Length: 148
Image (cartoon, rainbow, N blue to C red; front, side):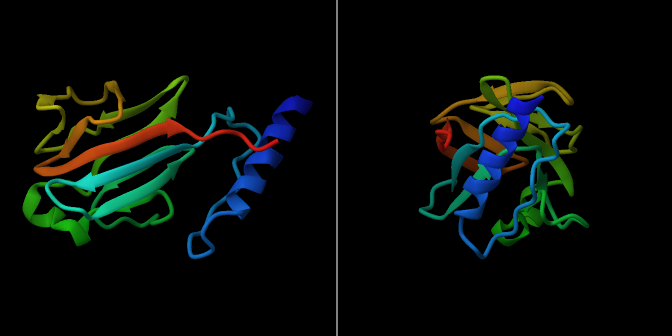
């Protein structure tokens, strides 16, 4: 288990070098340590972006009691675009970044295909992810290089 601890310490070092306006929590030692993914979402038809480093499950939706793990899409018109409070999860799994619809009312789509609820689907660069009617073009979805 010594190797897992060094990976966790390495991740803590990487997160400490990130933008100080964000709050990050250490990865618990019981969690498998996957490399964080850098993901840039461009809001449909605009130059506005959401940039994330995804190490664990991130909830996409509206207003949550746990803002550290929720991407609140309310500022992007989520209420009028059919985004549920708990709409979809995005998280790393093995060698992919995946999305899971949480049985949302208005659905989650990848490139126009409606995802069945509670099933995991891989995301790739240039995919169009639609959460309800809110389009998010994935400009970059790559695992970040580890720091030695």
